[in-house]
Length: 418
Ligand code: FAD
Image 1: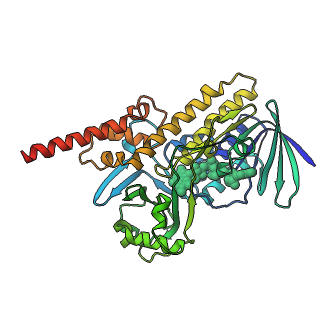
Image 2: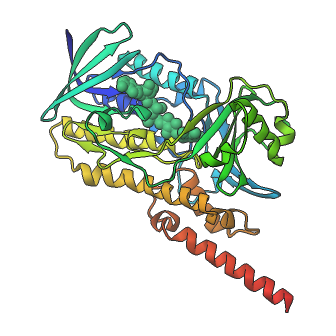
């Protein structure tokens, strides 16, 4: 069996894998990526957050992405009936990037993978990891190509950026259920000829359809728009028919989408994804680190997935370099804690969204601009800025604010009656 040696083996050529590979390669180490699929390949996760830009920049990807002409994104809009809440990232509290992109992931991920390859990192496509043996922090990984040929890769360190593949957690029984309830998404890409009806395309729109059910609208620069419904699996079960029939019935059922997307041409038949939330106890071990979706993926609302993938890989890559240089790394303090800090902040916002707490905050008239800027920072992905009270106290601040708004409104309406 053929064997090769590298300093770092990266599993997966998505944003997590390519960001890590590029940063480690730039430090002078021999890196190889193995990727199960042939690129371009479809993956969902099309709306980025400004915080991802710093990681993409450090990986040296920004110019290549810019050259692709993806749709620029400057904010996020939330809609419920007639009520509207528009966040513009320029108003965010934390200093940093104030814009990003909305991307077709097949093209975006291929751009990242081609760029890292052009820097000198080989990417073995259609090559699947089937086994890993650790000997201390050194490892021997068995991979299989599309023709069934097996070979091995000896590495001093492994970065697992295998996304929903969850290679190391699956091989070593590290899988753990998420504490979020299972949800389902039904989505497609649509030729959006009536786009000018809406104040778009430079932001994502999330429409509250019913409690716990919402719609994403993510316009691309090509005139095509990604449109997806997310909710409890039981919600979808009420609608009979094929996925396309259900999808079209849902577009018709929501006033916000009815007019703009009636009889819309779909680029592909609607697809279903469900029960995507999963995690593991530890995001690292002797000789490996997990990044991106392999750590934990929460939920599509707030578009946190690619940003957490890029930032966890940016952090992990620097620690891998430190480790390869023979320096001590405290993985718990330097990786697990900051990664969880980001994930847990978004978790509080995801829970508040489905509980309805964020409806109270988002759709309040005359919102306090300081508070709005602080929440805007979280929505831009700045979930590590502990000077922001809506990051530092993420688990309590939203509930407290919603309660204050409700009480004030109750007092106002009772004084109006008197
Ligand atoms: P991936 O992009 O999944 O890349 C992992 C790669 O590893 C894949 O190419 C895969 O082929 C490869 N791989 C897997 N197994 C193996 C193996 N055994 N050997 C070799 N290679 C392997 N995120 C956002 O930021 N914005 C959004 O708007 C958004 N919307 C979403 C909507 C839905 C319905 C869902 C479910 C998720 C959404 N996400 C969104 C999340 C987003 O899809 C992920 O967070 C993101 O793709 C994670 O990137 P990654 O690099 O970790 O993994």
